Length: 474
Image (cartoon, rainbow, N blue to C red; front, side, top):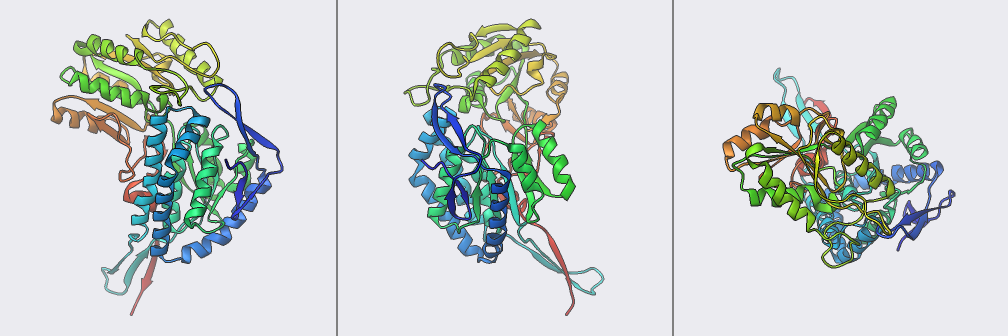
């Protein structure tokens, strides 16, 4: 298990002691990793600056083959990485294995994209020159990743950044640094040159960011996390007019019409709500169910949620693991109690669970008032608030009544209606009769305060490029 930070191809300890990593299923410590200082972060930026010039000059085909090797190396170590994710995050093994497969796929996809960064050449309308455009790499990219997908949120950023010719400095989440360090180690083994990928965990995120954001070589900040933190980072990035990629919070509506295939809708709801123990920005946060189908949906969903096995992610059959820490459990319970106070009815679930670890029982709340705080805040836990509706226009207005716009879900057997409603939902992604939408070949990102830019698809690699225009005459 790698516990040192990686700077310029060298594994080293920091000057700020160690960060204890806890097993959320037990609350016990499982490892201590090096805690980096602002000076360590600056050293990583220096290393990335030097390495990036060489990496950008490397032939696209060479970069492509190295990324392909990263993909294969991750697959070879998939069981090991999945175990590490379950240990430090707590998610069930099936979800952890799915995350590793998804994570690796970004290297395969971007290995193919590395050789397809296209420019253009044309004649100006006046005929006096040629217009040439090209897409050079941004430079050094600072990356700040969250705890809920300790592998995928790194590879989704690193793979396109490297494919485009950039070098990166990564700050993994304090709760889940072990996966990040191991992935970086595997990238080294796959042939990524020293200094191209640097990982500096820290217990002082503010000092880390303040140092990095002012480094002369850093030209972009890529962040996945809460909208509140994203706003602060954007304000600070403005001081140097840095390019930013922001994947921020969500408040996903899950809409079920009375004509929906109810079995499929509930199955989709379980995926959209409970995958990765409900700790995902794409998790369904508000369930709008047409009144004629409300009682049946609540009954079926409650049965499915109530039958989930909750426990340590390593235990056979566990479908819902622990929350990341005690503060998360407290936040979830506060939202549930607020909804109950506003007239909601608890159908299944008894709140926080006794014993070691940070567990919360899967919960369904029926008859939730649309004005309850639980409908406006990201739950990030296994709670499904169900809101009945009769008026489609009013429901869509309520679904859009949020500053978040990451994803939405729509279930109906009427495809035309489903498409009409999907187009009216103010979100960057829609799952139409699907409970999962993420795919390395699709553009992941949100509208409004859910983010800026896109990760994945052909668009993803250009986020890490500049556009240069050359006026030429011959």
